Every structure is written in structure tokens, then in C-alpha cells.
Length: 187
Image (tube, rainbow, N blue to C red; front, side, top):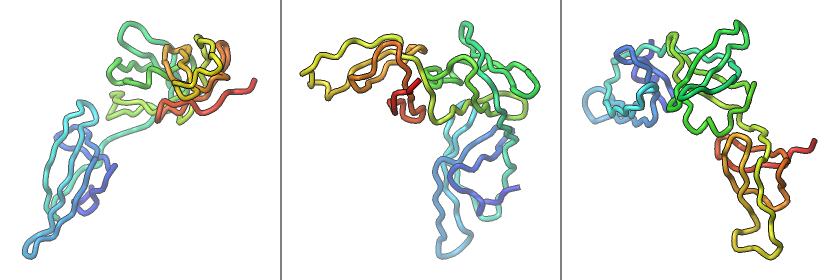
């Protein structure tokens, strides 16, 4: 059990059988009475944000969360299929649950899937992924209006700006946290 004094940004707790993460936290001690803990909580399944205030005696259950290493297999219609690397069980995440991570998912990429009880609720990508460039327009020397970058399309359909020396058929490393080009992969 957590007490109100344990609250901090990033802490995951369970309220009314739902997992929440503390996104903001503020402590205040009025002249008289108990300390107050104001925080913002985000529901990890629905995304709903609560803005409660707790007193120093309040307690919370830790969220029943588990992270499993899984491998991306394929997507069909509006679902993405992942396989547990230890027991080969398959789990499906919806298009909404995967979100922008779809831009970086390639066959057999290992990711961390977050489970609440037995239900998959989220995905964490590795910080960097290597993707093949499937379309890159030639860069015209002297074309500096775009700041010496050009748009390219990757094998997942993701479009980003890269330096002019990146060519179609090459491989690049992308930072999944920012979606930006990092470096060219030497083969």
C-alpha cells in the first residue's frame, strides 16, 4: 500500500479497480490541519484525467501492472499482433492503443507491452529503430530553402526530414521518442 506521502510524478496506483499514473503533483501544508496532496491522475486505459486532493492519511493500492517483452508480428484491420518471446502467446493491441508507435513497427521488432491484470494496455518501443528508406526524392544542389534536408518515406510509411545524402534503399536510425533522424546505418 502507498500512503499520500508516497505520491510523486510517474507513480502508478489503482483507484476503483482502474490503473492511474500521477502526471502532476503538489504538496501543501496549511498553517493548521493535515498536509494536502494535490495531483493530476491519468487513467492508463481510457486517458481520463482526474484532479483530486488527498490528505496525509489516505492510502492507495499499487497498480497491478506487468511489463512483458514481446515481438511484433503483423497487423490486420485495426489490430496489431504481438507474441510473447517466452511462452509464444499472442496478444492484440488496438490501433488506438498502439498510436504513433505504428510508425516504427517492423517485423520481429522486440517491444515492451504493459499489462494491467491480464489485459494489454500499452506499448513501449526501444529508443532507436532502424528503418529502410523506400522513397527519397533527389536533392538539388542549391536548394537551401528547406534548410539542407529533404523528406523521405520509410518502409512503415512514416515520412520525416533527413540530410540530403540519404538515398532510396538506404537504412536510417530514428529516435522513437522524437520521431527524428539520428544517423545513416552503415551496412
